[in-house]
Each structure stands twice: as C-alpha cells, then as structure tokens.
Image 1 (cartoon, rainbow over the protein chains, first blue to last red):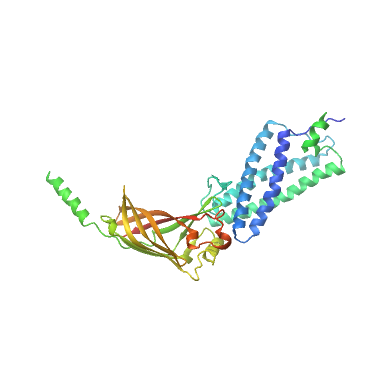
Image 2: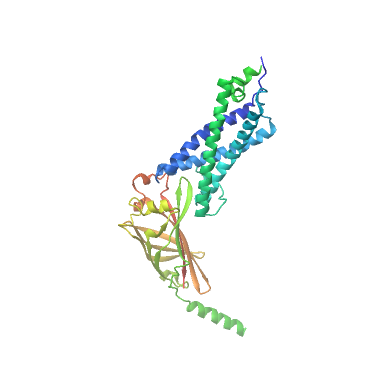
Length: 184
Length: 181
C-alpha cells in the first residue's frame, strides 16, 4: 500500500476546529448584521466577536505549529497548476483568517464598541472612535468575508473532487480517522 | 514678619470673600454616561442641558443645583442606538422630553469630597439620588466633577425586551463635569 503522509494530529485538530468555528461565526455575523437593534442582536454580535477572537488566537497557534511542522505533501500525480492553485488558496486562507478577525476588532474599536472577550476580558481598543473609519473597516470586513466565502467554496470543492472523483489521498491527509490506519 | 501678616490677611480675606460661581459654561461642561452591554462599557452623552448651579467653594453646603437634560440630545454611540434610545421603550422623549435633577442639600464628605443630594426625575418617575463630587478652582472657573450610578429600571428606561439586564446592565454610570464661572 502506498504510504500516506498525513498532517499531524495537532494540525488536523486545529484545521477542523477552525472550520467549525468559521462555519458558525460567518452566519452569526450575517444574521446579526441584518437584524434590527434588539437584545438578541447585541447578544449575537457579542457571540460573533468572541468566536472571532477565538479564531484569531487559533490561527496564530496554527501558524506557529505549521512553522515547526511541515505540512503533508500533495500527491505526486498533481499537475503543476493545481499545486500552484492549492498553494495560493492556502496562503490566502491564512491571510484572511488573520485579517478578518483583525478587521472586525479594529472596526469595533472605530465604532466605539470595545471588544470584551467572553464578556469578561477587555481587549485594548487599537483605534479611537471615528465614524468614517468605522464604516470603511466595516466595508473591508465584509469584503474580506466574501473573499473568504469564495475561497472556502473552492477549497471544499477541490478537496471533494480529489476524494470522490480523482480518488486520491489529498483529503485523507486532513482526516483524523484515516491518517494512522492508512499510514501503515 | 510684616509681609507674613499681610499675606495671612490677604489669604483670609480671599477665603472670606471667596466668590460664588453661578454661570455654567455650556461648551466645556458635559453630562456623560457609561452603560454595559454584554459586559462591554459603552460611553454616551447628552449634548444639550440647562444647568443652573450656584456654589461657593468656601461653603459648598449652601450650594444648589437644578439640571435639566434634553433627552433627545442623547449620543448613545451610533445613529441606530440614538433612534432606539429616544424611542418608547427607552426615554420616550415624545412624552418625556426632559430629565431633571433638583438638589436638596450638599454635604461635605471630607478629603475634598462633597455630595449633592436631590431628586432625579426621568420618564415621570422621581427617585432620591446622591451624587458625590469634587471641586477644583482654576483660571477664574470652578470645576465640578462627579459620578454616580443610576438603576435604569427604577425609571423604566429600557422596558419590554430591553429589561433583560444580562444584555444591557441595570446600573448606568453618570459622569458630570461642570465648568462654572
């Protein structure tokens, strides 16, 4: 059997935990944004910010881990353009996972609402209250999120295509229940 | 020695004839507040108010204050929040355009601290409040700075769905700064 080089357990755990949180934070942000001002809106916005702060911490941990642990290589059979595309999407996803929570944090500061993680830990306001800047950062936050949505769709579609159409090990590298057994 | 006596006389006379301050400067005075939303302190202010204050720093106990706040001038942090705050469930400014504080007494707390006692009326409800403050003189003006806490639900501010204090806390901190000439 061909040896499969999987990601480390830590990398796999971080990937799926972040995927789960992104899939919650994104719709919560959209719904809260669309709601009229109400206690539920304030509650959802807080949950959204707490998820964002959590993701920001996790992406930094993940980047630190990645710096010390080589990611699993792609299948040898992969054409060059697909390698470049995969590399591009992965780099962009990391950039967005850093930039999106950061833009949200800055936007919140500029709009005059401090971010208080889990309602107990106040994060420093990096910007003074400024309506124009706040609106600009809100637009940026939205644009970055639309970009993230497009890239996540491409990322998931590529993973599924490799798994179900090409039937190669690309997705299995990131699956916790396949890595150890297949690696033998 | 002569100079010292003269100086003492000068000092004592300045105390005896210490000026009474009564003209509140609208541009530099402020009434602000801090509410807590999901644990987040959110600052706001009332931009328009009429403050009638008469106080002599040599005998603050005789000081009086009558403050009227135009509630529609609220800055609650955003346009959306201002609309909500002036609406029926919050201040209901259509029916209750003003909040009013009338002092009944001023007490000396010691260590340069004082306390104004009085009645606060908001949304047709009147409650006794105590507002501790400090005085500082400088460049022909007297600065009055103080802070106290109100419970918004005592006045029915933020009723209905907003009465859930796990989202917007009951306690609201009021901060006032009056520059009086």
